Image 1 (cartoon, rainbow, N blue to C red):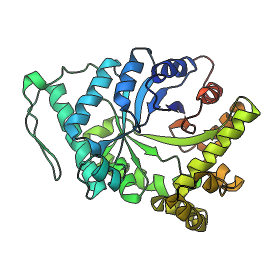
Image 2 (spheres, rainbow, N blue to C red):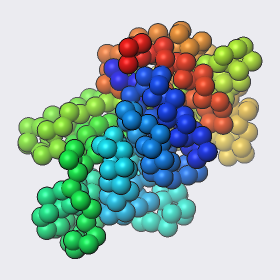
Image 3 (cartoon, helix red, strand yellow):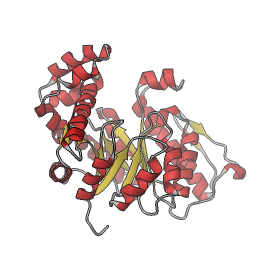
Length: 343
């Protein structure tokens, strides 16, 4: 199983952290799109590293046109000598419409066309063939030589899709090179309600000999980890992980995850509190049973053992992350404990 580190999106520290993650044996350094553009930070990290993969986890696809995303991803892949992995997600309607000013309708169908459009653009650049994508949502039919990047000797980067609901998870299996599981998902929910749809859609794509299925498909488990170098740091990170889990559990879109475990009533308690911004109070409602179902907690070696035990049989990659605004150093110790010493 490959080991990835999801880091806080901090421009000042991301390049150095990527280098340290590489030295600790991590296979991929991942940045989400929250307060900063992850492509810019990962391009800087490419200059400080030589081996580690560089991934967006996730970039907001529907905030960009397929052409915009195609250029950003191609540039990162080229600047890193073929080490990019492009994780994409839709975000939710209020952010896409009210924050980014972009259209929102039928997101799973739109994402399917989006990925097809990006691949068509990349194929045009790689092969020199005429660009001719005419999809339900996107149309790209113009590419003159001056605007086309040079072909890449290692080919285009892989596209991984994040999903929670059945339509988007099936879309990931049907059109992507991998699936990014949401951090708010237990191994039980993943096995029973998520991966069957992903794998069935992938099997259909392979049976139809879709061109992208020549590349291996990967399942990435994203897991929140509470750890620390001393008791004080551990307690602070544990509290922050509880608050993050409470935020997820308060969100209506994630109710099916709670229902898997018979905890739907927890959302009924949390959602009204979230509307009033009572985050600390919400975190206190995440008891130890809920905490240890959706996250891993313990000193680094203990956390590493638990992560492998939980996800070793169901995921191709394990991406560990911690709470925002915390020191990522303890997570690096978890990465070291997870990776072979000879990397």
